[in-house]
Amino acid sequence: MITIHRAEDRHHADKGWLKSHPSFSFGEYYDTDNTHFGALRVFNDDIVAGGHGFGAHPHREMEIVTIVLRGEIKHEDSTGHTAVTGFGGIQRMSAGTGIIHSEINPHPDQPVELLQVWITPERAGLEPSYETSRYPVAELRNQLLPIVSNHSKEGEVAHIHQDATFYLSELDAGAELGFQQKEGRRIYLFIIEGSVKLADGTVLARRDAARITELSELKLHAEQEAQLLLIDLP
Image 1: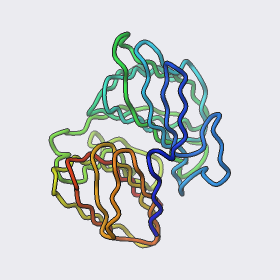
Image 2 (image 1 turned 90 degrees about the horizontal axis):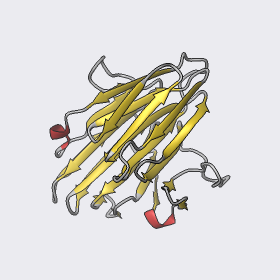
Image 3 (image 1 turned 45 degrees about the vertical axis):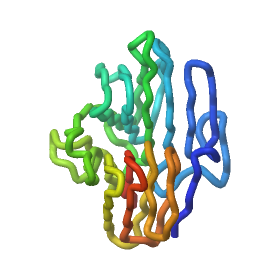
């Protein structure tokens, strides 16, 4: 089954310094029918103004992945980690038993555009941890490149404590992709830029999403040049 969620139907929060489009209940936005998709708990599409960000705040029992699309974000946390990440980089934080962190746009005159994704961990009580990784941007072209996975080898992609894999891709107009997974799993597909047509003829445009179940094979056709994120979920 494929359920389409159009970009214009997402909740929109505008705090001046932050423009956010959460795809699931988050913060002041709560919808009892839209709290998660399997292990996927949060999918926020954010633009943070220069010099602003999220001050020190706590998290527990959550895997938090930040994918920077444009600009840079600076991370600091209570375990002593500090890092600045831009396009081509991934931040993964396991909040585990408890961590305090901040995320600030370090550039006063340049916004940062990012996706922040929260996944419930495979088990509670993990030791808090943080890592940054980089993926080869050139290898995004016309293929699904894994950027986060619990099957990753050290140094290749960010490691997440859940049976999930994030794939990023940049497609030429007219390019086609196929994806297969084991039966009984879920797919979350998010179109970052451009437009993509599914096998049933449905066209997903910029910032549209599809929540897919009971379908182990997916075929995608780029109607125009496109960038997308696909998450394989338990």
